[in-house]
Image (tube, rainbow, N blue to C red; front, top):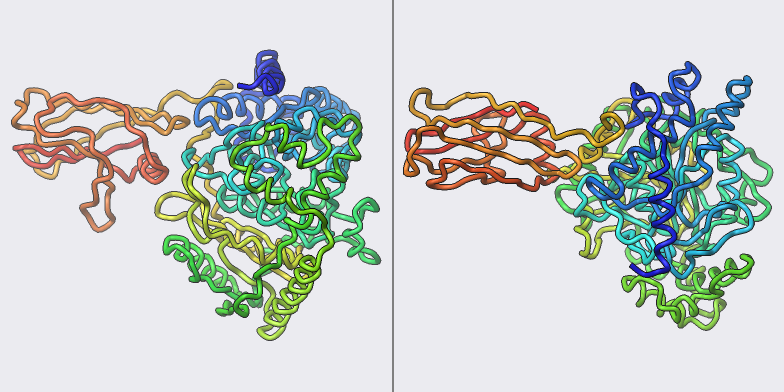
Length: 619
């Protein structure tokens, strides 16, 4: 580790080493909604300070240990004091609203006046902003408690969440997989219940992609609906910021606290003369009745496993009263419509110029310092080579963007659509180290139109799939309403097995699997005794299978088999082979096999000279 990275790690470890025991051991924060947390505080079952301790315990158990998700850059040293102050307000009869005392997490490109804003870059590790980002200030006014800052793809310039300061974040559903980006730290942390809700930014998919791969809801709002003042920029033309949440109601509460006009962000002038939407008012279980949804090129470049989930979700929406029609946009309408390359170098320099004592003043200095991750080197150098922002190429791109907006508007008007629907990612999230494929982020990002990622279900591999709904300008609340209707009737939220509820403030002990005999060939199958245990955070199963009294020649093999509804099944793992009368070891479990095992869909099959024996497995 470089010496520059030590202060953050030391602060992280010191905060944990000084942590008091978690609060009310009888209260469970895993998967708890904002309304459930508020009810518990109102009833005196838990305090905000205790919630802080309970979430910190989960971070301690699963962020560096267990599945080692690596989501947190820095913890807020003032979190408990702020929670204590809010508890005192509650005791005095003042409750600011639904976020009062609720622990949240912020992506580390949001300014907080007493914490560095790093963009997860070592080059900016000591960058201390003078004040809060607009949305951070709104959250403080609403009574939210910031637990800390999450890792992001360095300077938000990618979708795999790897950085020189934070390293590689991992996906709780499968830590070998990509957590999306650039808000992957926030997405992984929220789905692992490290906080009630978390904030990210979206320049081209950086809220929606982490939401999709983490079974969350995430809205890229209409450009200008919420302020980007105080957010370290990637592209002022495309940057947006907002929450990622486990439920639509949580998303609505978080949005209501942060949207609205801000004189420091000219884009919010889109709200001039009108009130911002009230998202909680849009939570209508009947919002899909009569809606027309255009299924936009669903099969185009989409993996079959993803298509099946998306089509099934759209069929469920039809069952709730929506009409779904297949539609397409003109070929090439999205080509050359992005503005990040035009903005990044210059926007970053403008932001750094506003920070007294900034350790660097430009993208060029970051490159020269050599403190950025190699995964970003080529991108940074290409963008730094741009000598000026206003070029004929910029004018051409802006004209193409206007044509894109016109094409989308024409399609929606012609078909009478309330929304367009398509996969947020057309492929399953990639293995870490492999190039991610299938992002559809640019349609919303390049048009400025709102788009909401919705949990649609899981592939056969056990990985989440996100369905995206894109709407008209400032139709954000309509999208949230349709998502609420879908969630109410067909909830798809499934917590990751790798981050289970804690036991006495720590990761739970291994789960013992009860082995029950169910021989196919009674009296003739080879006798076996088995012991199995599952380490959920580690995603591993330990086992020991003994064939008492058997000769080596009697034993052919022992396997795990997935039980089929129609009988029989398929082998999903080999535990022992011919001649092994005692077998044991530890096996790594894929997300699907782990899920099957914990839901009783696997059996232990022993095969020998005497026949085939089946042993049921009950967690």
